[in-house]
Amino acid sequence: MTNEQMWGQDLTAVPGFEEVTVKNLTMIREQGAKAAYAACL
Image (cartoon, rainbow, N blue to C red):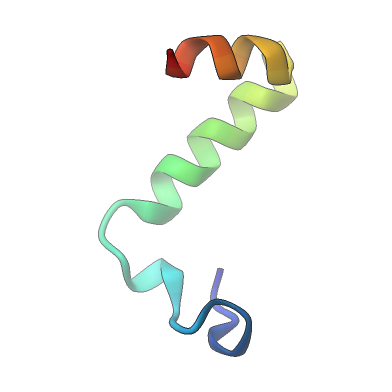
């Protein structure tokens, strides 16, 4: 998320981005992608 060359900016500088990303990746790992996708709907 800090690779400015890849993303065009340091995404960790976006308020809340890193926290939400970690939360969502944890959900995918613990419950699976299908459940994480369903939670978005």
